[in-house]
Length: 197
Image 1: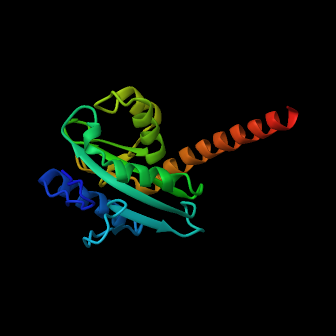
Image 2: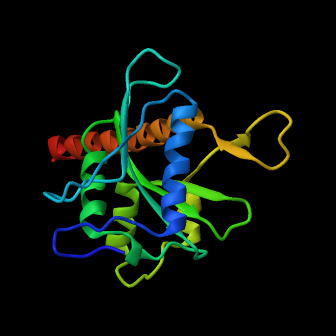
């Protein structure tokens, strides 16, 4: 899907394009700004979309960076994850607690429209710890992934669903805050151990 010579090729297959349009529309339907990062050919873009949400609303102030991946497989093939994008999203996610960067995975073969977010930090940890794995295990995704909350498009709708974007952003924010607390506690323990030695 991508070329390796520092030039990223647009995902032009129908399901990927359809999901990208659907994803962006869901944000706009909730009046949450989201912008497509356009590949101008000079340097590869960090990811597909970003959003910056100011302080003061129902969702805390944050910046989010999303790389969208669509697969027809039951588990995400790790070959679909571009290493440079994975490294950059992990690096962004480790910058500040208000910056969230990761992958939105669309498992289009699942009948329940399975859409899951996983942070770049968590996905990079998995890839680095499991170099022999060809796919992202379902167990890992259940533990670290955040399912996209879905609801009826209208109260009378029988099948049409829409993403609950505010709830999704809050879930990402809360999950990253937990990770930041663990990192801070680990650092404090290490400092205390050094001071006691």
